[in-house]
Length: 483
Ligand code: MTE
Image 1 (cartoon, rainbow, N blue to C red):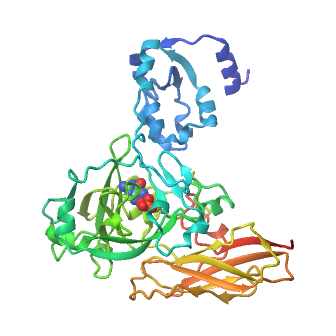
Image 2: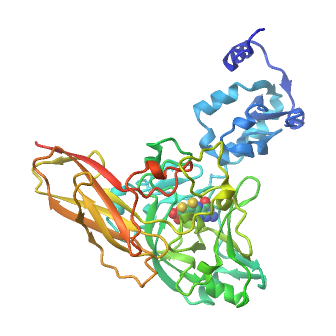
Image 3: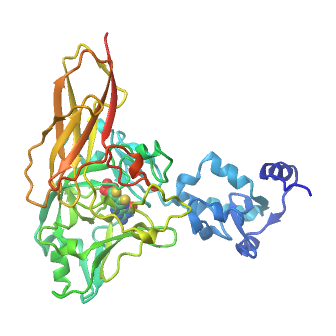
């Protein structure tokens, strides 16, 4: 029996023939496995029926069935890479009639009105925009300046006219209420907190060192600390008539940023956190004494101190009080932790709870990994940040200069939070004599919070397929060089 030709052979054969020409209407008839799933890109037609199962983004690819890939690829620009074009080429079956080509090339880019960004930010992805500051700058400021605060966007930044803005509130036992931005600024007391926001994927790149994970390759700076001001969510919910004996268990949030199907970014938090007297959940309109910047949720976002960044919904459009958690992809099928034994072929997202409070964390921000220190220096100053979720206060940071054999206690920035409300990070530093007899040093830090939670020593045992929740000891290797 003759072996099946490999795709490359098919490609070679195809390249020598001329392709059949199709109209856009003909392509539109191929949306199912039975009819074959066809898509177009620029002037070419592809039959991707056999690729659907292999698509890393799952069956989202079916959104393009029978039509053009451009609108989806401009939303998820990760596709515009050489290897993706090479894969697509293997599935080419024809060409579009020339008069049908123009339409798809004119697709408007949903990212064309993005804000200007600070050039110091290190870009992880442009569309959607994701970036972090150089980690050395992070510990220079207790309050991270707005311009260099990390940005984590899943979708295009919406353009919001503050005069037209309305916040919609509804759900279990509530009146349906619409509030203007001015209402939120004037009807409720302004409450200010300093809180650290950390993405679940902070330090994901270290997980990649163990085994490849799926997600943006964040370094050490997908975290920042800011002063947020706004109305308390609990005050706003009471205004909307929230009954005392509420059955609801969750407060869901929806953003104004929408994917190509019209679904907004969304997330939810337990109602217990939303209503706790010391929970400090804000509908924030200011960041570090300025109106929220566009990238950080202008004009209104939720700040849930002590809780993973993903639940701090930006460009807030709607609040729903409910018995159920948000059904958003990012609540249900993302931002969850798993055993290192779980991989993409056996993961069951329903088996794990959505991440809420984050674990204890600390990171060395200076010196940098692989830095050369001059042996003429008498002293070395090690610096970093430390923070724990759930309002747990960091009480100590231990630093080792010899790979963990001996430890010293670092100096912590002295900001004394109220019990259970330690929302802000502590910056720490330790100045010690530079060991003269060593050529290499492994510097390590690990923090302890007031419930004596500590960081795990290595990454491998907490590796998970999405690369979230990396809070292993932070390690930096430096070389000491004589001039
Ligand atoms: N809210 C909306 N509407 N859209 C988003 O993409 N990203 C979330 C959260 N809120 C997101 C959102 C994630 S994953 C994080 S870590 C934080 O916003 C990041 O907030 P920042 O960009 O202000 O740093």
